[in-house]
Image 1 (spheres, rainbow, N blue to C red):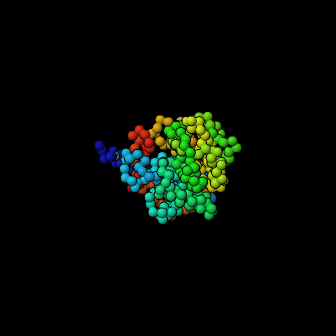
Image 2 (cartoon, rainbow, N blue to C red):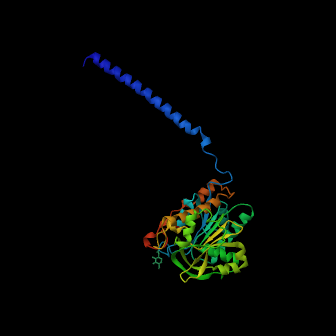
Image 3 (spheres, rainbow, N blue to C red):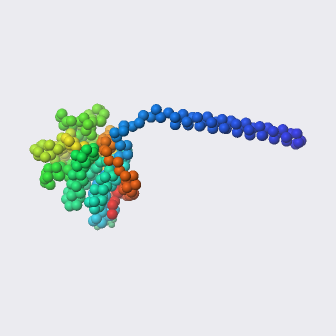
Length: 343
Ligand SMILES: *[C@@H]1O[C@H](CO)[C@@H](O)[C@H](O)[C@H]1NC(C)=O
């Protein structure tokens, strides 16, 4: 190659280099402008409702045992929360603080200051420290509402049964029903006050299907009949019946209640199972059934967003459920799929 050709090729290379640098910086400039166009248009994102709290936290009370009939842990001083309740809350846009029932009362009450609502799970324990703790937290939840906060409370299955015992002040108020491991419909009570209740934002077609299709999971052998609830002045002044169900022997029991004066909702059925539990072939998993889980979770969290409580950040992080690991136990083919165990 002659020197002249080498010189010419070098010049071309240098020119290309400059040219590409130029066009590159041009693109950079353009992309920066493009980015700026997003930053400088806050008007397209209106501020959310300042009266609502968009970082709500729900406390879930743990229940005695390992949640797996001893298959995971036989210790007597442990407690658990089925992960389905945690997922239920998380799916609706809230985080969970476990309220471990064996913790000292002072610690539990402090944890209540970190949450915007409480959920009592299903289970079997109806006495001892567990029942006393449920009582204490329930009383505190009502006090918070009386003091001007909006502090929702969900009682699921056993949780509802315990609230019934607490309000009636009658530990023998429950009746026996055949409601073990079965899907059922929900019969909405005539003239029920659906507006502003858990069913308030159900699409009309789903609300209709509730009474004709078996879309909810039951797993209980206790409950209360509408007659017994209505005959009890304490219960009938506190609760309004939203739905009833028929058990296997066609006996009618109360399946969903709302409080007349507090953001308290009771379920004899299991809204959390449809989307998150697989241990029984009876659990409905249709799209309608999953929507029920979602709507019921959305209602709890939408109520919690109305709470005025603003938990201290670091203390909250230290107590979130993320500090614990769930254990998979679904391989047993029964019971819960995952549980959080607290030793
Ligand atoms: C708990 O006890 C039962 C009955 O004795 C036993 O079958 C089971 O393996 C024990 N569980 C553990 C985790 O050791």
